[in-house]
Length: 342
Image (cartoon, rainbow, N blue to C red; front, side):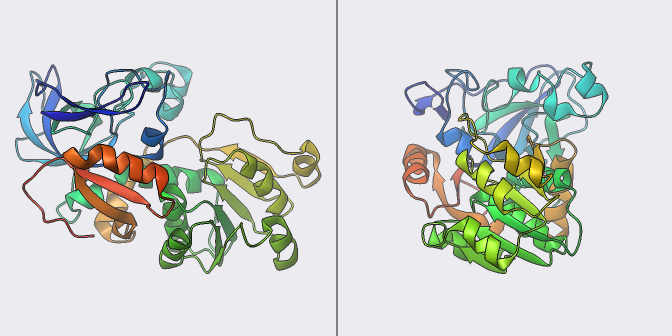
C-alpha cells in the first residue's frame, strides 16, 4: 500500500505492507485524512522517523484482531489519536488524559502509524463509531474540532460575551464557529489572508481585521477590548498582542503551538490581571465533536479547501506550506465510496 511517512528531511511517499490487526485492534481502510499544521512543520522528537503520518482521519473497519469486540466489518469510524494513555498517573486519575506523559509515547501519526495510508490499525479503545449523518470527509475534521472545543471550554466563555480570534487557520475558524454557536455577542478575527478572512465571516465572525493594514493594538484600544482572546496562529509574538488587547481581567487562551518563547511585558499581564491559559488537544471533547457534527449544530465542511489522492499527497503538503489561502486539505486514501464534493 502507499503511505506518507515522516523522515527528518521531509515526508516521503512510500510503499508499505498492509498492516495486520493485533490484539484488541481493528484493521481499517482509511477513507479521508486531513493534513494538520503539525504535519507540515513535523520534526523530531515529537515525530518518530519511519512513522506513517496523519492523525485526522475517517475509516471503515475491514478486519478485527484477536480479542477485538464492539465493532463489525463495515463499521464507519474515526480514531482518537491520543487515547492510548497510561490510566494510572495523577493526570489520568483526574481525567486530564491529554496531559498524560504517555500521549507523547503512543500518539497516532507521530509515534504509532497513522492515517496517511490506504490502511492502518487502531485499538478498539481509541475508535469511535460514526453516525450515519456524518460523511467520511466531514469526519476527518472531528479531531481539529475537538481541539477547538477544548480551547473554548478551557476559557470559560459564556453567552453574550465578546471575543477576538488571532489566526484563521482550521483551529481559529472552528473556534469562531463554536463561539458563534455559543452565543457570542461579537467576534472579531485577526488574519492576514483575505481568503481566510472571508471564511471567518462565513463561520460567524462579525468583523475581520488585516493585521498588515491595521495596528491590532491601536484598533482595540479605540474600538473596545474583548472579554476573551484566543491565540490560534502559533505565532509566538501574538501571545503578547493578545495580552495587550484583552480587557482588564480578561482571558487569553493559547492553543497555537510554537517552540519559540513568547515575548510580553509582565506588567501588561499583572496590571490588567489577565488570566493566561494554555489549551492542549482535548479529553472528552473528541466524542462531543462527533455529536456536534451529527446534530448539525456545527458545520465544519466549508473549511475543506480541497481533496486529493495519496499520490498527490506530497504536493498537498507543499501547497499547504506555501499557500496562506488554503485552510484544510484532505487526502482521499480510498478510491471508492463517497463522491468528493467541496
